[in-house]
Length: 440
Ligand SMILES: Cc1cc2nc3c(=O)[nH]c(=O)nc-3n(C[C@H](O)[C@H](O)[C@H](O)COP(=O)(O)OP(=O)(O)OC[C@H]3O[C@@H](n4cnc5c(N)ncnc54)[C@H](O)[C@@H]3O)c2cc1C
Image 1 (cartoon, rainbow, N blue to C red):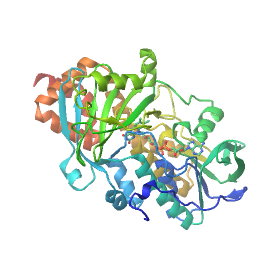
Image 2: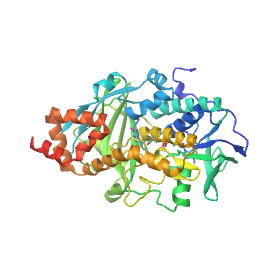
Image 3: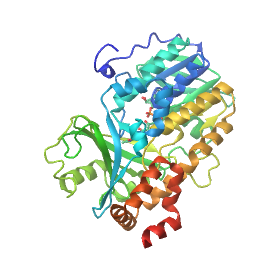
Image 4: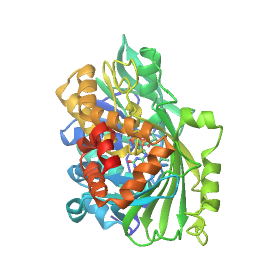
């Protein structure tokens, strides 16, 4: 890598292929899910076309926390060592607070922290650069093409089978070129044009359900007290004025902190409040935070909002959490609505679904099988997280639970286990667990 901060450099992707080009698989696009899936297919020798609207270096609005689930893929794609050589914050635990100000720290499993498998936080510009750069190397080596700065403007279907795309070079109004392939993977985040085509236009189903979408807002700050160093806790606060959402502080190392707030959009609509002003109020006035922010500085230009399509199960929907296929097309990551409805983590599921979609393309399996495997793998934890999200809307329950946990090490140990094992999360909403923790 040429410079020390190589993730701030452009990525050379070569020339834009001629219009009419035919590929084994087209990827819309180069976020984490798209980069991972394209890399996996290119590693199998497939001729891939990867199309990304942004031009590197580029930012993506996120909380910047990367959980253990992502790290196996980061390793398999060959970028873990490089990632660890760049500045990052090593997460060793999570601080939770409740509306009445009780606080508990839940350490991440020691073994995972020691093996560097517990989690990191680092800016998306840096992490996505590494994944897109690696995808570019692999795709070009296997005879495919990579285009940046081109927006997918149309997704074509041939008698109900997705057959290719049209791009606008330099934006929607730019020069048009078209490409075709037997498979198209939609990984374009919550605004993915492939998702719009197959869910809304072709199947006539609902794309955005505001009770299953979350509004997210983040800022970068320097010098927040208690967030120094390059290892330690990330913080999730169920602040009184923010519930049914939460306020987070995710340190990034070197004194920089990702500070944000998220809430289900349907619930936010009822409150008629803006996330930005809710956050400003917490920072300026809340007794737990105002002193911590007293000498901190907001980093100019970093105040931005975005949407998180949750993977919570939809009532009456046969394709859970939402349709993720059509003949000739599969959706991954946010395009398939796979963000964890409790924690807001979406990177891990983008990588998991990216690997799965690549495998289905290799085996030339049908879309329904993909949807089934996706929900079998992710459905149990997404369903649990949805139950936990609904529980966390009740202030009294949060006060009671965090208060108990702060006094009882045995609950803290159980919470550590729950973070390590999604199956253990079943406990949190089991009546027996609640009775045990209430009575003893
Ligand atoms: C405020 C906030 C905080 C979050 N915090 C966390 C967190 O701490 N940890 C975590 O794991 N997850 C977090 N998430 C969720 C996480 O950011 C997403 O789940 C994750 O980025 C999904 O990856 P993806 O590859 O599916 O989509 P994206 O990362 O959104 O990538 C989609 C890509 O598609 C491109 N694109 C879109 N339309 C087109 C088009 N028409 N043509 C060409 N290209 C196009 C975009 O430029 C982009 O590069 C957060 C989200 C938000 C909004």
